[in-house]
Image (cartoon, rainbow, N blue to C red; front, side, top):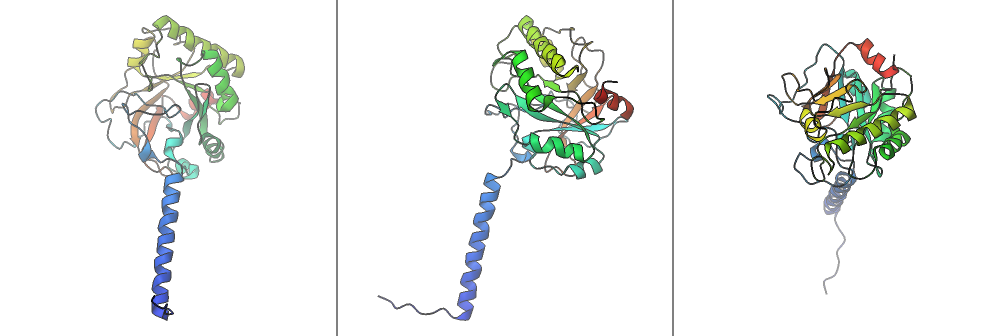
Length: 288
């Protein structure tokens, strides 16, 4: 058996440095593996995802310039939409970057709450943004009324305070199954109207509809019944003009890219334009 010899001063320092390095590496691994998801983790259309992981723009069609890192700004107010996929957000930096409004995911179906909503919603308000919540629709799992109630009870409520936008029904291609959630066009129309009616009864507001022209025309059979009820938020990633779903005269909000870059957000973020002045955006927020 070899006898143990005491470490000299130099050897002791080397071993201490090596131990500190190993500890730092282990801590870094724990922080990166257990922290909030970043934008780099966000799935792409066609990827398999778990229940609750859907997000606004999952199925948005691409046009010319769709994959560019776009930070263009139209004459109207500029906005973003986010979920837990964007990770921790510095909303003060977002506001200082010229972003006027934001919608953030609150709920999906009747069993999922976005884990970042409870920080995104109050912090964006404190930073001075006009903000609102969105619900990812799951017409295949429960009624429109049940999901509208779940949405209102978990972040989708409204108040007239100059900073709260009406809630959004995000209804687009099903990320978990068949495009139209197994419903006929007439069944889908009834589901959407059920959600709309319940949301309006609970909040006094018309919901905003977020969708794509291709999904709406295919799954509602180009329904015109919501055009005079709900403002349209159209998703079409392009540098040209967006394609509008049948029945809607124009768009109120346009999601034009998923490759936006905004200070305060790590990675890509959806960028949006509002079709009007800041006064009109405030009118949408305040229902005036």
